Length: 328
Ligand SMILES: [Zn+2]
Image (tube, rainbow, N blue to C red; front, top):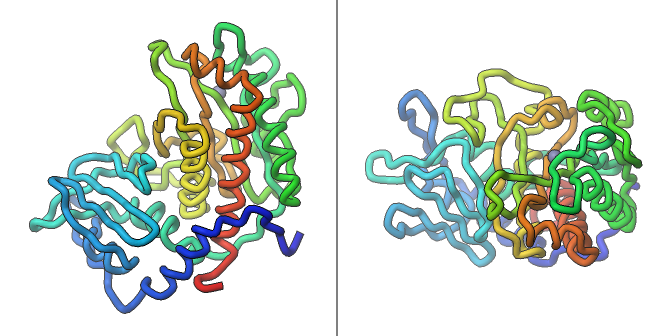
């Protein structure tokens, strides 16, 4: 497939590209500072560089242009991109009276999302959907549903939708079998996959917990969601850090907007399949089977289709972002 067809090409994204082309990279420099041994960039410079108006609302920097609103808060890892939660690797910090953002977060998330064409073109033809758990491994358990079965139902829906966009789609399992975690990423590599999307559902001991979260592998020297110290090693998945950031955001924002589910955010974590992935990869947790209401939704065909559409459109948007240059 050399010229993918986009029956639902997002017009808003196209407009954003045109606007950024006119305003981004207009000779501003993004200054950085070393704070406690880590490099941070000035949020005001980031705003100017990408053509945003920036203002402070208390401890929060609000960046706005015609298309987007981004919020960074002093001492909080929670950032919002058009209202969608992203858990940063490091909390922004005040420095000399102005807010700064870690260079890791800037380089691997903010820049790829705001300037996707800058990451570099990459073919996206073959997509591996990793169907979480299977066989003796049920995964999360609801009152009626098993995660392994929901994951497979959802993956089949995503497969048929992606095929309408002429992608070639492979599943890591087509039935109730259990390929090892190693076998899943090895299969993706052997088949020459361009993207690896791992589909899971969640459970928690507290039954009220609900919502959707999207994981990507933590870059080297970045902090994972569950800890504050940095990941010192470099793993295979880190070859695609910037792509991972754009892919995670593109899918997650649609999962949240299509379902109106509780937004648990984009999160960095070194799950094995993400660590070992040779291509851009994300792991999706599309709901909590331990929550009665969400379990009922996940069993519903209409809701599964919403999730599948969100994943499909997110992938299409990612592909378009890295393929189409500014102003094209
Ligand atoms: Zn799972």
